[in-house]
Length: 96
Image (cartoon, rainbow, N blue to C red; front, side, top):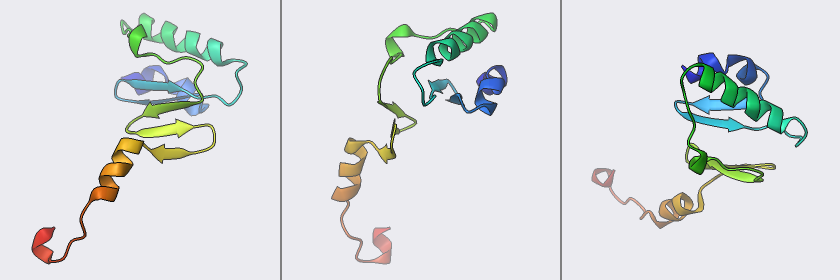
């Protein structure tokens, strides 16, 4: 449903969405607020709302779908990376 509502912005790669997660990701700060306004407007027009306490503004890095998306890279969350590094080495097939 979200993908259908925001299809035009998704096609222009200004917005990405997955289920109930929406991220506005344009490279230039100029125009960002206008894209956010469009997203909010289209959501409200379709009786959908956002939780302001879950919104993040003016950040250079944001967690999205269990990864951290930054201006230069996409990486795993540090906590997840530590868990992976702690995995013990499997020695036998039954350990899988």
